[in-house]
Amino acid sequence: MEQFTAHEGLVVPLDRGNVDTDAIVPKQFLKSIRRVGFGVNLFDAWRYLDIGEPDQDCSGRPLNPDFVLNQARYQGASILLARDNFGCGSSREHAPWALADFGIRVLIAPSFADIFYNNCFKNGLLPIVLADHDVDALFAACAAAPGFAVKVDLSAQTVTWPGIDRVSRFEVDPARKHRLLHGLDDIALTIGHADKIRAYEAWRRKEEDWVF
Image (cartoon, rainbow, N blue to C red; front, side, top):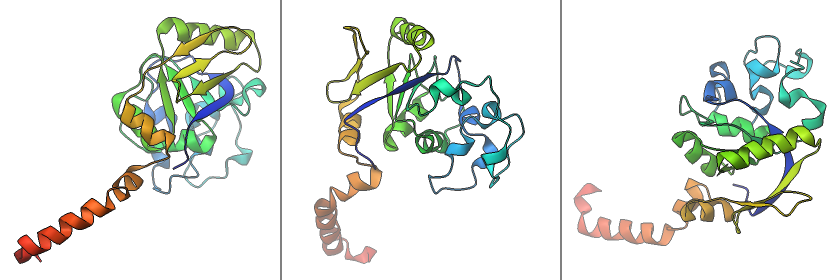
């Protein structure tokens, strides 16, 4: 998993609450577990004017010009700004896969659904919870200034705004922070205890040989 220490990027505002995982990546695209290739179907029902199908070439599909991700000023955005309860609905891990494959590294919202929040850390995304007034101010800044970008520092746990002396601080669980800073997924975390695992298996083979 790619390490996350600090990131500066363009902010794209998705001004909707209770965005569920079926909106993030619709159910018909959940036929693969390869973790890649889902970016073209991120927010599929909102991004396109037709109905998407699995393995479809999306390059010629009609885009919805009113959807924020299709607007020229937000092309290349890597920080998604959202409202309350982002990622609610089913527990599909494809949702953070689609966001990451699209190029999103950071999500900022007043709250996230628990399972989605946990899945983000396991897949190299940083979900940041900020107070409502900070999120409201970020939405206003995005609307007022094309090209609005912020810098996120995970070590310092800060979001720094450009051009003004404003820093928003966020909380993050130390274990999750460690996971992102060092690029550790579940497998890498387990491998880090390989010596203890081997020692336990050797003890078990000796003391509980009947199992083998």
